[in-house]
Image 1 (tube, each protein chain N blue to C red):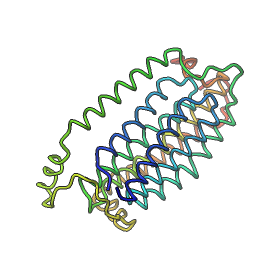
Image 2 (cartoon, chains in turn green, yellow):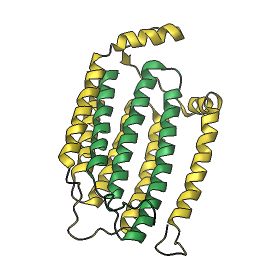
Image 3 (cartoon, each protein chain N blue to C red):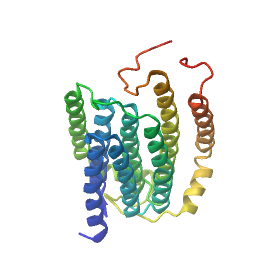
Image 4 (cartoon, chains in turn yellow, orange):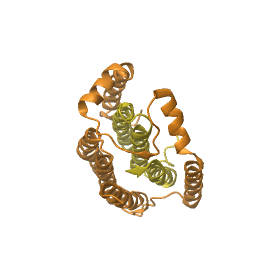
Length: 102
Length: 181
């Protein structure tokens, strides 16, 4: 039995770590990795609230499954874009990808 | 303190240390490997919260697919020499992340969760609770919920996954017109 506050603080810690990574990293793959941390923190939150709000139902778990599915799609698409950018510019640093059109 | 709570706190500390490692390490490969460790530990946290099916999904999706995808992308984009991994303004990023964290913790501490639970209990007609008392939710129940209450989002997620699959194939395939996107 864990108080809901502790689950939420755990999740907030992980979310902020991920946010720091997204804002500070230059390498696009590392930005995507940090984004996964943030999405993961949200899924933990949903599982925690599932126990508080709807302990006999499974809606929170279903939401967490949606988050995992969308995270997988986002990572696949993001890495495809990273590969394409690398082939184009021989670099995956997000501050060097500054073209709006070719 | 009972065993489940002890295990939860221990796992939480290890997970956060590992997540910190993801964002501070100087090596991209270590960062990816630590991410896999973090996500696997999160699967164990789900297990402690009695979300068995979710723990299984987490380890299957992240441990299996995402880790291979990440390492594959890292192999295909070899880093340059003398690479600088962080932006110059990283202290600003750290500062704003800490500020957001403090605000979130303040919001969590200031909220009266007993009252929230009572409001929820009022609408659903069950006794309020302030401590998460995990009830084992089986895969059968998750499947029923997914295909009854959340059937439309489920179908939309299927379309989203299909579009993402085709889109990433199109984007990543070797372009005929080199140098153009």
